Length: 340
Image 1 (cartoon, rainbow, N blue to C red):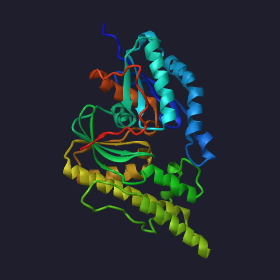
Image 2: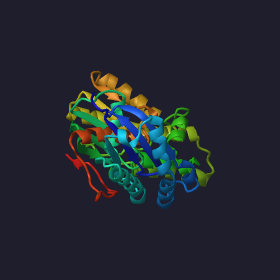
Image 3: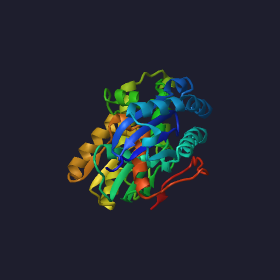
Image 4: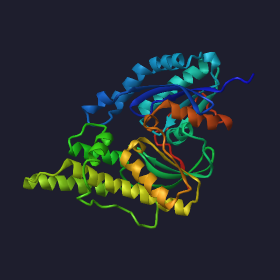
């Protein structure tokens, strides 16, 4: 009888401490997530030192809970996987150290995983992936268009030149008086309002696949500040709807542009902003119209944020390639995919 492939996966790149047990890269036996949102809300964003301390406090409990929920022991495991970048260096080091310790103590192979690959491979929990495919990666720190020519082969074909989409949501959220993280509440307000402000769609229509959200953020803030100065009351719902329409239009237009240049059968929309209902609705509607034969895969909302299950899914690919690390593995906070 063939032994089950069981990967114990760690994710601690930012403000979630997560440990999961994944079977064969597609089945979640456990996915423990200890979030720190309440600790960072009062600061309006993630404080790296606070995040690191929380990871130290929570990671051993997360390991125990993950193994217990999956009903497995260390002796059942095939390998240990861990996010080693990109992310906050102090946070990454907690996960890397924990994973190295478990791997060494139980003589298990150690698999280094790119956090961004994890987000994309969360789609494997929805259905099998077909190569080549295109991924739109949208999160608090990254906005990228990535081609996957084969399992584990990533190439950036477009990226943001300044703010990431999720970062822009949090910045305008502060102006609207929304606590961190702002994305979900801005999305909710946007569905109640209308695009009355017609904010700029930067780089839309240009002959490249790059993004820029800094100008949009500035236009939003200037509009609100000007209204404050003259005593004008603006609709929060219309402001949110106008901002979200500008972000979503550019994300969808650039993705469509990429699909024309890089024909594929599947599109994966991944990262924290993939939870945005406005983006999900607009992307699926536009592609149904222009590319009815393309399979659009968006992971369930619970797997769009940072979690260890996605790291286990990506690790399955790396395990097949025997891509292992040793005790010298270190955090690489600025890790990225290759550019095409």
